[in-house]
Length: 222
Image (cartoon, rainbow, N blue to C red; front, side, top):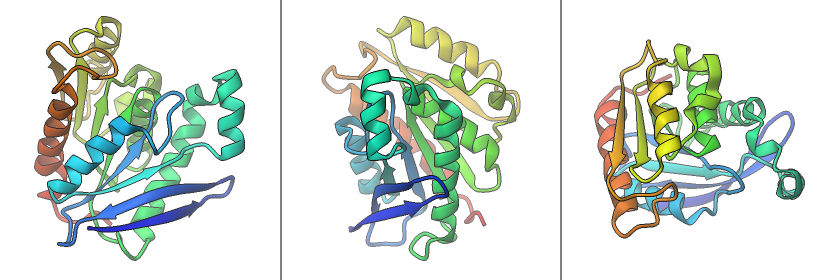
């Protein structure tokens, strides 16, 4: 496994990230968009990323907010719901992956959790030629708004059975994805954070199979 700490230089921020690429050329690389009040150090996202790495898929976990913005958000909780800002940052990271020598030409997937899922879907709509597949875990796809109708990449929505309100929001959002192959998967006995034994492993397996089907088996995206 080749790992590296990277910095994604954008017009308004320098975002730190952790890039992991399997020794064999990976079938693609998945960019993670963390959820409300979280960061690239999220233990749940890191567990999923490790599972994807074991399946031969590269991963990039980044912070979508700067350190100063994160301190502000810890008090106000406003930036974590600024989907426009998060989408712009994620789109910039997608462009970085497409241009960076280690990952140039690799198919790019997105994995979003909570509000990060909305940013992932909106970014997929903004970069239809570069995003090959999207997976949401306990996400808020409804916050992507009108972008849902413009998503072209295949989308997997994963929700816990014990998370009824988020399940309802995901079901409604799925009905608005008219231009994309999509599926809603419900994990039995799982709550919003998938803390129950074995539930996060199910998420990882579902995500790996989705990316294998719709990302790694396709030709590189330019």
